[in-house]
Image (cartoon, rainbow, N blue to C red; front, side):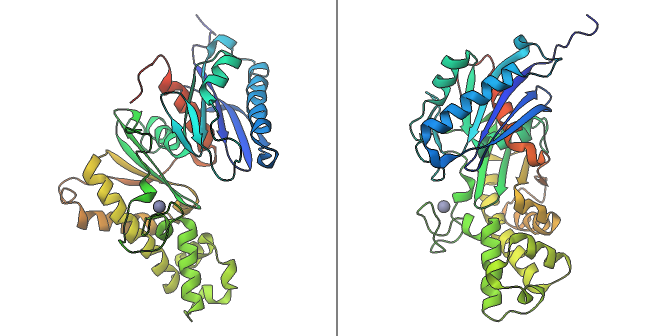
Length: 331
Ligand code: ZN
């Protein structure tokens, strides 16, 4: 029928410590309309839960004119934290979202909105979205990293997020790369996170400057040095900054090699603020993979930057809703 819109849409919620972002996402991965409100996490779990439900009602009442209610097939929610994927419960919320642990997110929304709801860790949602619509578009298997405050990770296998037996599969930022190395917030030592996160890169550059290192970064107050500063200096050929990026790539290369050997993914996607380092980070990672994964010289797993950009949180949540559509069994 001419003029009839057969596209399906999902409501998407991206719960963060500072903002809740929501969007209507199409089955092509495009954001049709979006909203953003402060989380006001300090006002407690009930307040945040009410805001989440309120945002969903707003989305349903305020759909773009071309979209009919029956074209909305589900809701996806991405959030930091640990989930029980059998029940859709947020078992342990993030420290910056107090009072959210134990929230039965899926049941809560299915009851209040009558929409099939799927929830997942935000890094897993990101990996799924990059596999469906982003840098790994069409890939059935992919591993994804987000280089930010920490190092997030997600694994997609057979087109589905891999959760594992107890829900913590794909925590790629907590692969050990230095047996007695730096402490990690997770309790382990020597995880890739403290070495290769954006914070880790900035911390290392700061340490070099405080030890008397010279160059462009030495002109900045050490405590103010950010990962972006390191990237800017490295782009100008600054040796200290380049060594900080190379070190992050070295440890990421070790971690990625371990994951590639286990999973043989079609593609490795790297996103988050730290991925703006671009080829300065990706090229040495590829070099380390070539050294460490003995299949690489024959056929190389591509290492590429994420494509979905600043909307990746809500697009990831939308991807969850479509991945869950019509399914009962979860991988
Ligand atoms: Zn860790």
